[in-house]
Image (cartoon, rainbow, N blue to C red):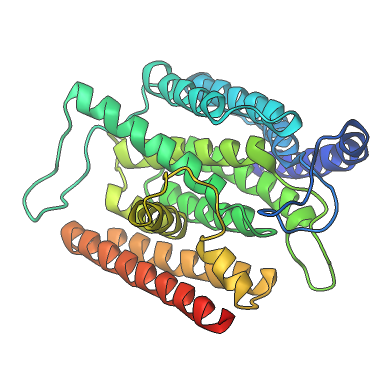
Length: 348
């Protein structure tokens, strides 16, 4: 009962903050203006991240559980939203954002005691356990990778929010199956706050443009939240989810970010080079609508995540699932490259 009340409050506060902050953001210049890389129309307020944080915090205050184990989680969220807010308002350097992400992940590791200690059975042998320093490095790389993968997928109205919502729903399923009830409640609040944001960002039929964007504040908030629960649920001493299952749940953002970075390396470019070579950008160029892209990517992520979750539930071989995941990435990479060649051919 408290879960539903907290969820309802979270949704209402998120929506209220959006309605309250939207005219203020337009007045103060907290907006995303179109340019060569950003091809939306008009100035869009960048308040989604702040509104989702406010909604989440309001919901957390009403939960009938102790939040002592989640203090570093809340601190990390607040730090990233604050830095993202500054970046959205007056663009910071990439180093500043990257430093804030590192600090947030380190808070999770050293204060929250939430880190990757094993990778599961990926090579048909036994569980791969990590030493102390290797664990720190792997957790840091994984954390930064997922946070930036969510940021990179945020290139079409509604897409980042839709994918994160799908992934949160799948993680709720993981938490219910493994009886992690505190995690279930927090994940529910996160999902509801994203749902409130999508009311103003999703490309519904008849809506020309999104009314707000989540900005770097929102993408880093959601990326860090995913990192926390992916690790908590897969590294728990009590009935953990296999790490390879988490790869399937995060499939689309991981595929997209990795494919783009490989493409940039092949072209001799920096992996942090900004371009329009992501899968969703290519589909836009092939005349897919934002709604179609959301449905395609969202359904693909849900199906793949569900496959991974079912494989865990029925105790399918982890190594085979890892190989299947890698094969799907190769298929995605080849498909994206085919789309690039098709666009080049059509432009001649």
